[in-house]
Amino acid sequence: MRVFSLEEQEFIFQHLQQDPAQLMLQAKRFPHLPMQELVSQIKARQKALQKLPTWAQNPAVVFPVMLSLEQSSSEVTAAYKAQLVQGQTLADLTGGLGVDSFHFSRQFAQVTHVEQNAELQQIAQYNFQLLGASNIKSVNIAAEDFLHQLEAPLDVIYLDPARRGHSQERVHLLQDCEPDVLRLLPVLRQKARYVLFKTAPMLDLDLALQELKEVVRVWIVAVQNEVKEVLYLIPAEAPQEAPLITAVNLRPGQEPLEVSFTQPDEENAQATYAEPQRYLYEPNTALLKAGAFKWLSVEYKLHKLHRNSHLYTSIELCETFPGRIFEIIAQPKANAKELHKLLPQKKANITVRNYPLTVAQLREKVKLKEGGSDYLFATTDLHNKPLLLLCQKVN
Image: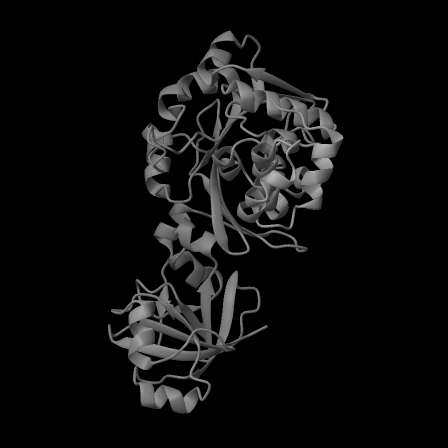
């Protein structure tokens, strides 16, 4: 592992706003400095400024190769998941850069950071010391070997398996991840009171619940309405009830927006349907991923536009709805001339839900540019007819 001198750290911070490629072309101006390594650190810090501010703002922190940085959790999601589990002891079996371990260390008395890549483990261990996380023990060992050597059971074991194949292609199925959680699950449940497992957002929720079997809680975590990760909590003892599914939207400077339901709640819900009324509701992405479609209609007393559209409507405003809310201004035809009269700036934010055209195809057909304060929803009504709704956002 490379520890950078004070001069090298100063160089990195002085050039943090520069284009790394352009900086590399100027390498001859700094013959006494290891420019390739420094530019690599600058590039990593630029990427980490928003994702990992605690790391990026410390001049002595060392960053690993870009792939490890890309695969790490963001600080905002790591801080959220750290408060989902409690206890004294936790092991992060896929420690990586150590962002999750660092935030778990603020909730647990003792955290073990397990990382099989020797250089990455050394970097994480060095950074833990810089960041004052003295209750983290970092070990260079494979997850399977760590479990085999573990004698006393832990309160929690956390895993975020690598989701890239041997050729660095992205994989999404559980059996394609490293380590193989399905194979390890019986051992994991013997070694901890709870197993907290993170999957890629692309993995089908129903498939994951079927394969993991004895899940007690699920969290679908979005950051500013973009799903980032899905978390599954598996207890040592088999649960007696269906897992509680919580859709979470993390928003800067605000409390997390959380909505919880179970799959039986969704299965037993009797949604109502109606023509578009005064208001239109679009669930946030975490709820769409969770599959809370009929349940939303019942819980918030709203009508669905169509069985497969997942858009809702009402006469009275439902201010507590967990998603975007719009007021319907008009129901125009998919005709450029008519829409240009309603939208003289010839622009709108277009969303397609259960509609025969894509956003690009519809935009080309009606000759509208992206942007502005108007929203055009293209969907299907309860009579299976294509429908356009011109809306304005309700603050």
